[in-house]
Image (cartoon, rainbow, N blue to C red):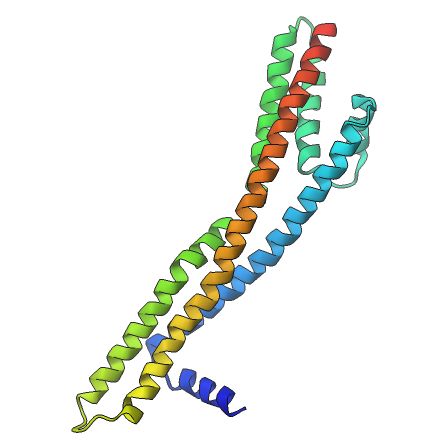
Length: 225
């Protein structure tokens, strides 16, 4: 309990710039943790949805039936299902257009899938820039608070005739809290960013591979038509 009170008293006794730095780092840490939990939930759901859709898609069923099942869902399709519905919808629309050649149908479906894939990647990459910013800037913000606090402590020593360790230690301790807070905000953000960026890259590869394979299927279907 004494240590907690001493820690709190150091923060309350710090200079105003150091307190502002600590408040900024605390807000950055809270935002990064909110982003971490949000991305952890969303990326896990996207991976499970991709696994489930691939099992249905490669299960040998009719593509038209699968499309109608996805469209009947109460919520808008996401992930791999969104890429599939965008491509199949455009393919059917062009196929029903009189005088449309197979190459145009396939290219139109490919472009629609590319747009849907880009939209899905934007959704998955949301908040990653926040984690990168917090991870890269928090240590420097904390270092600024530390430098400022130490500078104020040494400036105060100029007003006394004899400096002792007991006079310098509190000022330096409260200044070093800013560095610790900067690392506390930065380390989880950096670890989470690296993990989530890798997950997003893997999902992008899966979506892109599916789009290419689906394009080949549509190409064969277009030429048979």
